[in-house]
Amino acid sequence: MGKSITQQARGRGGPAYTVRKQAYVYKISYPTLDAKGVGKVIQLLNSTAHTTPLAKIMINNKIFYVPAANGLFEGQEISIDEGKLKEGNILRLKNIPPGTKIFNIEFVPGKGGKIIRTSGGFAITMNKDKDGVEILIKRRKLKLNENCRAIIGVAAGSGRVLKPFVKAGNKHFLMKSKGRKWHFTSAIKTNAVDHPFGSGRGKRIKSKIAQRNAPPGAKVGHLRPRRTGHIK
Image (cartoon, rainbow, N blue to C red; front, side):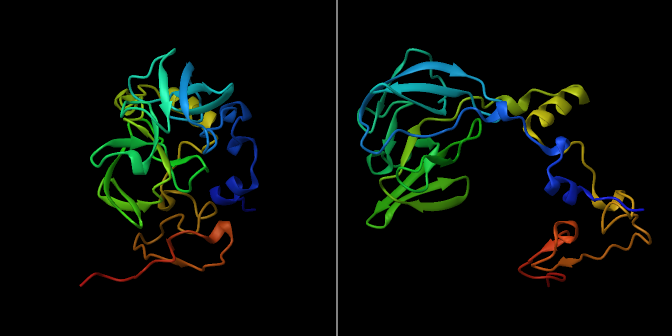
């Protein structure tokens, strides 16, 4: 008798694939668009669900959480939508000069930061015109509304990936806290009952293209590829 393959088990949402609720007690957000002035960093805290330390900030007796900038400290005052170009300050893209490093950037004004939130991450502001502000993310360019907000500087925790896990148990507990399946192996190394690519009989592997409406257990291989075959 067969059993559910990994994709099906993950979709079912059993205990092995369920993230702890405590990991997501902090929600990253910005204050309302009309919030201006000086806020204060009440606390820097760790969140299991985020790779960057979070900063608990108060402004006008309201509290919000954002990824901490590198060099931020408890008790520091930060400017929101005004003030100087200083690390940790929250400004609109139209008020940030080109060549500035930013992170925790909004896609839509007022919706909160959605991109560049991982530890050590940053984007660079580029050209401005009537269509918006262009930002550079590594080698990718993106144009956003000029009223979108971002934090000046680089997200804290940039040395996180340099520290080795040393033991498999450390990686086990990290992945368990995030609700991810670990450890994993390539499909060809599994048994035939565990994956459509399993057993590797013949070892002459041909790529398979899954149908657009394929169920989770069969949605493997090339998913809606732009092209197939050898590149000539």
